[in-house]
Length: 221
Image (cartoon, rainbow, N blue to C red; front, side, top):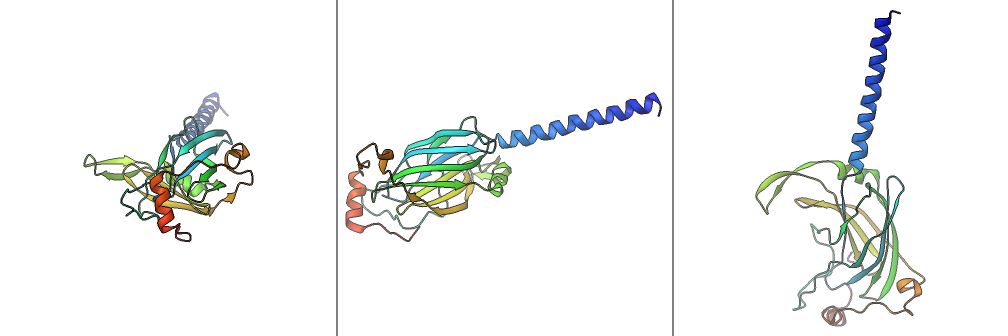
């Protein structure tokens, strides 16, 4: 083998290593896609997130990636409809999960104020869902009347009485896709991990009055 042949082969090998490194970096960049974690509940069925902890695909834990009140409608005329879910639910109230790669697992502990009861759930995010999050899509935005490239990088979690959990993927200009439904379990320690003497957060007056008049539509979620 001549020196020239050796040099060519060495160059090809180095090029292959560089390309492999570039492919790896592109994949990593895809998993670093910024994403939003939000929570919602059916009309009047208020809920409070004690904590939402995220484990990303690199097995890093992001504690309290979500907390506080969830998004819920409370029409004052009691004409809201808490039964079932909207055809295209939004991502709910929440925030970006800063510094995290795409999610592998989301743990949620919340107070269902309508009952009241405290639940927890482990939500496994499948690889098929992450593929959806990585995929760019053409979308028409009605707000500005333009076609854009959008991502389903909003993870919206719906929480309903009875511990029902639904998960959607959506984007600002894309319709939501359901990726999971499950039922959480009752947290035996109660609200605030047993630190509140069994007391849950109170309902607003509007939601309390609605539930007293019409009840909770269990089985509709």
